[in-house]
Amino acid sequence: MQKWRENKLEGIVSKWFPDKGYGFVETISGDEVFFHISQFSNAEEIKRGDRVSFTLIQTKKGPKCVKLQLL
Image (cartoon, rainbow, N blue to C red; front, side, top):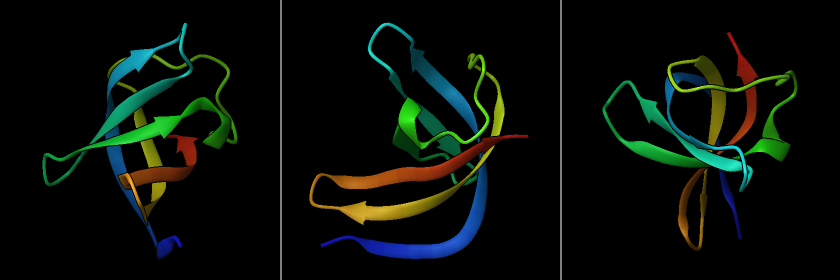
């Protein structure tokens, strides 16, 4: 079961593996959270250092970014 945290958060893409389709966002608190390219609504080209907004969910494997948007 997934628990949703409804408010939008902001962070920076800290790691991006385009060949694998996933990466990590560094949050304001310094945590790194997993994301998958399929969760972007407007991603034409993602790169390290991009600012993003996202919703944070808790999964069995840990926190995950969903509903990402480039800022």
